Length: 222
Image (cartoon, one colour):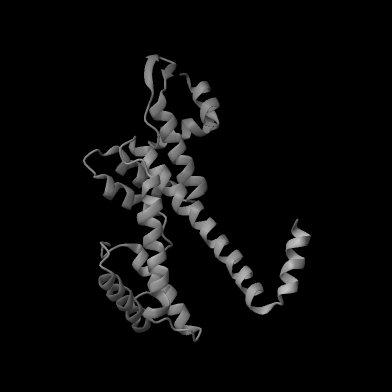
């Protein structure tokens, strides 16, 4: 297909496609003349991946380039490739990382992950993100102990093992696997967050309001 067709199929404007080509995020098309190139399905997959990283993952171009390089390097295993995308989605490091309180929170995270038996890289940014969360809880006077954290860990592993990993097409195009990972991580993560808030409201209503009020709410909703 010509670049105009690629733009129509992908929904990405032609000037943006040309920018991705210049930046090396999108492979060059097959040159058929001095002014014309042909593009194929692989280019559509790549554009979908770039859009997922940019619009859903909110990644800067430099981070997108690292993910794309991992996708293009067939010597990079799928696990490492997906990890590159996962790490790119992580929050930036906390400026206070390294002080005594933060180090204590990080040690708590490392010990907990080890006790869970999870295969997580020592350099995974999620370790620092969780440590920062624990540190913030402590500073708010709500320090979390393992008993507070384990239900969340169990729920996360159950989701990953029983549902989320099954959504990723490991045997398909590498671009598509990473795109699916990014979309599922960000958007289904948002859905999980919203479901938790809705569940809190429902449980609050069950625990704190008379049964008659429940019936009135259901009647109004219908």
